[in-house]
Amino acid sequence: MVGPVFMSAGTGPAATFRCHITIVCSVSSYVGETLATNVQVAAAETSRIAFTNLTGVFMATDKRTVDALVEIPRGSRNKYEVDEATGRIRLDRVLYSSVHYPTDYGFIPDTLAPDGDHLDILIITHEPTFPGCWIEAEPIGGLDMVDEKGSDFKVLAVPTRDPRFESICELEDLEPHWLREIETFFDTYKLLEQKMTEVIGWHSREEAWEMIERSRQAYRDSKVAATPKI
Image (tube, rainbow, N blue to C red; front, side, top):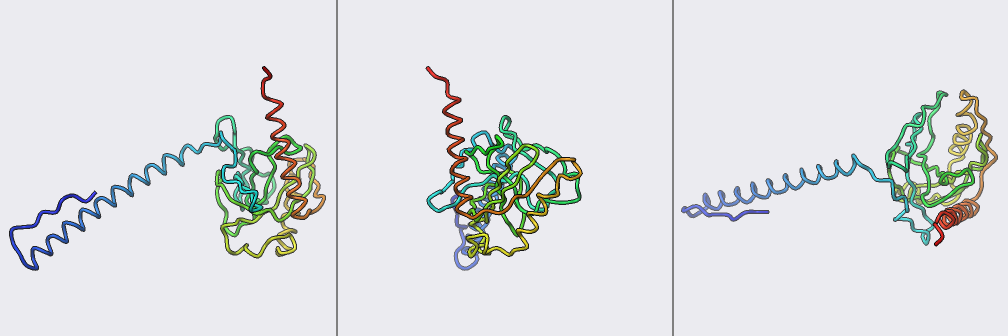
């Protein structure tokens, strides 16, 4: 905080000038120390991102949005996954093919998809975010596909904090090339891994929300089933 300011014995403009210098220096020192402390705290928090409580605290279903946790940023060939046991982000693998993820890729917490994982979500962004970033997103549809594990539905969404997507509410509002690029990626990205993928087709926003709600209910049911009976 700003310390006491002592006036010199003199009077007039020179004394007033010295007083102003003292105040400015004191304020500058305080601001510098505060900023340095804040940066240190932020760095410490960032270095130990906690994922052990994936409850989607900021989820706002009344606004038809979800809170999504990004694992893989757009443009990456690295497939990252959140290790919920440790709260760390692991490198699952590097894609074998010379392709990259066309969107930010992550999941919706507190959901359980048919494949036993959280429900996947693709978030269209103009700039990639980073693994561990929370994004409030508005679902606009979904991609139905299968892989070597079976059904693998993916919600498609846009970020609510980017005004460039304010007019995007349905799949039909999106530039068609986005959809073709996403389809092609998921149809081919495992070819060199000798693993099968098949894109079945796109589903509407309403169907995507039905899948979200079913996955939330499945998650709740799994928690009830896992609760020890007394």
